[in-house]
Image (cartoon, rainbow, N blue to C red; front, side, top):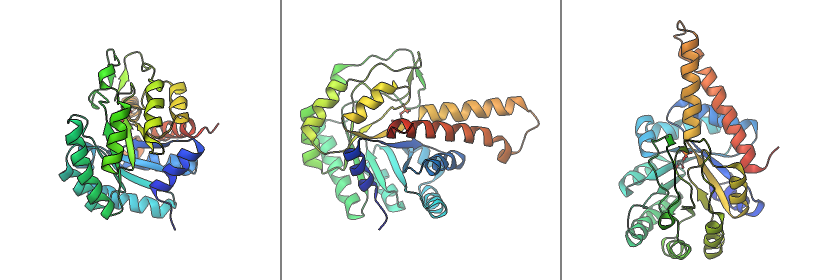
Length: 287
Ligand code: 13P
């Protein structure tokens, strides 16, 4: 039987590697991500936020995931990233997404637990995996470079909250706030993660697979350290957006007569594929 995302997460937990979630909002990006997974024979998680999926179409994303799975024979999973409402997550589940992430980080812990529980109940009936979130990861995902990012102690996941959340909700994965954030610091390298906090969370939640959001710009030693301490899924968006858009701009500027999408989309796709390959190598300790 085909392996599920949960099988891969379990393997990651046991063998100390992480699976990358790479966000997309266009088929050129989607193909590039899958191509990288195929080259390295690695599973990939394709991520769409509410905005990305609204642009692409939930059913379109599922249909094209199916086409790419069939054509490549690769384990390709589709995740609805940062769903803010149960209603939207229901739509993704009904459309055929493999996983959904409920982001209740702006709610009180009680309210977050309450809605996450409802999502878990609905999703599990349909065999869909659920990621929950405790703590405030911070910063709007639409911002690329942040002037200066400061880690605010209060926003970090409290180990006892994580323990309670996991016990009461029945989630399959937990996203944590350990100094990670969406976007990249202006210097290009984000402040160091609080691996001490991650260690304390892990001790409280046992085998629960942990997720690192805001993977762009994170120092590589921190990524390795986080994987060693139980992170099994890492999300990357900003670096992919920068790579795709930067290469597209350069390609179009270099030849003003190039009006052919299947030609000018090739350099951004190749650059995106190389970036995803680089990240998969980092996350899986491949040389
Ligand atoms: P970055 O944009 O920092 O890579 O974060 C992506 C992410 O966490 C999506 O959920």
